[in-house]
Length: 367
Image (cartoon, rainbow, N blue to C red; front, top):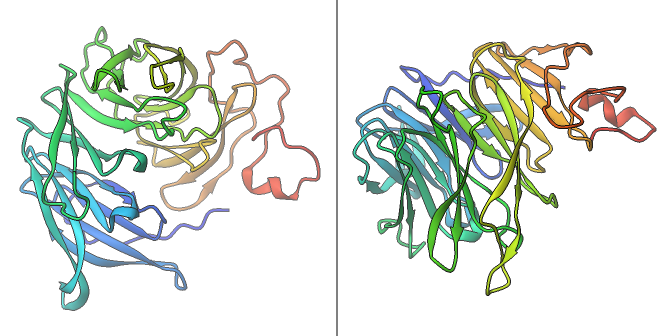
């Protein structure tokens, strides 16, 4: 069952990104009106209240992201004005329109290394420390680190990865490094079909550098968004890719232990295990649930669709939420996910809505 509530944001232009904090009780939005707004959930009333808003950049603000709460209330933004910025909430009198707030947001640093629009910004998984990655239309991924988490005014550029193609988005692999080396995926928005649209980079601890280990050549359309699934025991990674349709890609590392007995890989075997075209339009965002079992996608059709795969690697749309907040019926015959794996047909597998699973007294195929 879905409960949808509209939020009157008062942004004066197109909203480009929405990001929830670690607990899902705070939300940040950014817009072409050059502002960022931070919202807080009123759990009793179910409403979102604006707790802060400010002009963040001198151009359209493309993305906003939250740091892990271990480092405080910290967000990062990136913009068409060629900069990324880090903001921290501090105690002290602030204002929201004609209301007084007990806290306000302070710009801690501005990252100015890019020569063109900064198109995405993402904090690294917590185990890597307070690390921030940006990608730009100038074809570089830049990775910054705050050496002192108590002083967010100091950020050092640790790595500059030359992708050499216009970058549109980045995604960190959240898997803990005891099992896999740190990994990032970079999306490309070039329209030339011959150009690979997704690059996979892995960090080599011995060489202390990021190496490109794979390019996904079967994705030929510009990439709008990427998201790695959290890995709770799989021997491979899952990557959601938003292009003109939705793709789910499996990345199987070739495991080799380095001198420190840490699993490392020089390459990965990639395979597109699902290609889902139910949106019938461009897909703009993808996001996984916390267990990495359900993938959400949104597209120009005005719908959010939830996708789930079974143990055989078959994927299916299990629920649809329309832009007006109503839930659409998923037709049993609209199996949408055309998996290219050897077991790509749905056969006689049983499907059901997630909300109805609790009432069943038998084993569920989907998990």
